[in-house]
Image (cartoon, rainbow, N blue to C red):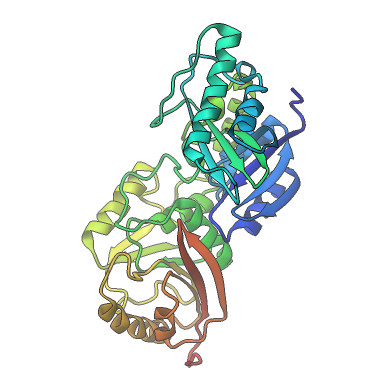
Amino acid sequence: MDKKNQRFFAPCPRGLEALLAQELTGLGAQDVAGGYGGVAFAGDFTLCYRVNLHSRIASRVLWRVGGGEYRDEEDVYQGALSFNWPDFFSVDRTIVVKMTAQKSPLKSLEFTTLRIKDAVCDRFREATGERPNVDIREPDVRIYAFLTSDTCTLYLDTSGDSLFKRGLRKQAGAAPLNENLAAGMLMLSGWQPGTPLFDPMCGSGTILMEAALMALNIAPGSRRSFGFMKLSNFDAVVWNKLRDAAVAAQRPAEPQAIFGRDLFGDSLRDAQVNLEAAGLSGVVQLKQGNVLEVPAPAESGTIVTNPPYGVRIGEQAELAEFYPKLGDWLKRKCAGWNAYILSADMQLPKLIRLAASKRTPLFNGALECRLFEYKVVAGSARK
């Protein structure tokens, strides 16, 4: 196994591929190539550890272990059987196989997934006389298969739980953002730590927490475990050195110009619980308040928020009444601020009656959204 030149693929929320490519390049990745829903790259396993530790955008890091052409399920089985799986992990590790496909001619992806699992188990039985057990809930090793119309590529997941699970958040709101999408929104906004950041509808505080992690230079993976720890080539010395260096580079948890407001006390309590659990309770300034009434917390800065758009508040009539008032609030109280508002409803932001200077397509899970940019000045142009 060539440890220095391995191939990886990092999926991410759709719309953030270019940001992830920049992030990976900054972390030392080679042959970086953005695609649909993720970025391919190359490097050694130190890089793999570093990306898992530091990436704010990736959903996971998949290690490409092989692939080939196929015509039917038997070809897929034989291809998976050809890999010496006992070289990658021990038989006492539990496994799960997951599959995604684009334009595959196979009739049953579920059956094909089972055939890959059979191939892995059969290879172990040939080599050791035993087979690994399957655990669909909390497996030690996740094997991913990706099928095109004629090729099957096999990956080992080096992340384990999705990377947006920072190991920090204890409470989630009714319609939470994933942490990597929140981080991507902050990056797209151009917000820089040290300048005011305001989420006036903060819910359980995901955007605020990601901003705090950035402001304090906290590596998002510094407080969790990873799938690569269960693989045979895991180098604990290298990993511990990387993690210790990341922890040493953190800034003290001092108050930042990061402000959160929410109308609902339950949401604010969730946000406070999350911040306390992460050791960030003194970093972010939280207060209860109605977005339509609260003043901006500084003369200028960046607003990044995920307001209701038919997910958390289902009544369209309520929302149609709310959005014009939101536009009035921005104009009256937030002159000098740049506002970034996420919405899955393409019509509601028009009711803000301010000219959006940019509309960035993003996906919140399967939900297609736009991140609307409003540069608010006194007497902002109305639509």
